[in-house]
Image (tube, rainbow, N blue to C red):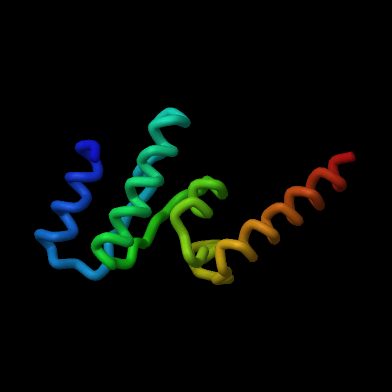
Length: 102
């Protein structure tokens, strides 16, 4: 696996952490590298059995790594959804927005 994966794994093991906080960790990567890293992060989470709090503004990125998605507004969690429900609701919101623009 690549060096970022090794660094994350090392951090989690050294800290003996049950929680790994990742704040926009892939925001500056190109699409192909981001896809690879998302797969690596998911594998790392499963391999170590730790909880990851993954902060992102990217809907697809959130869906790729999450079991559950917490939506925040004004610094507070206002909704927690399964990944499937999150994708359904976000698609419906985008459809509603597109209809409103027409």
